[in-house]
Length: 237
Image (cartoon, rainbow, N blue to C red; front, side, top):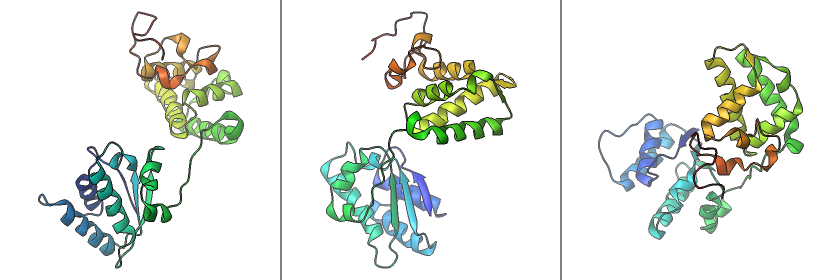
């Protein structure tokens, strides 16, 4: 199996070149898109590769012209339908990816869709608790009493926008904050500072500090710049 993140700019040529490099056959000179993908199929067979995983695959399709979209779909189908060495595709990305899958009947028939729903404290309490406990244990830090209460993990889930990957990122960011400071104890303040660094928000809009943290739209405040002015420019939308 070969796994790669769709490069930017997301073109068939760049993706084909990246696959070849991942297979151990980097291009020595510039070639056309057609030749590149012919070589991709050849080297997938030579390396006995069974699956190709393209992450952020929607970038290949979204905001592209009709011809480019058709070329993308046909190229992906050619990997799955190759008579000499058919390859399974694993496409991951945002919900926009569904638009590409639904655009072609053959592609849709050959793909099973798995939707990763939002994480919530009610549905994922054991998983969130285990993940946090394992990360803290690996870090060697001693968690303070305020982190051993369920309310903190609820704040962590909300700070991560109820998304699995962002929750893990937020968890690691708090631990890194403590390690960078040379602290031996992990505290709530470390997570609050990590969120502030990421969003630039004032304490009133920090889900680790605000009393009514569930009312905070963490997706909206991301990107605010830290300043002495308590009102972010542009306000909430």
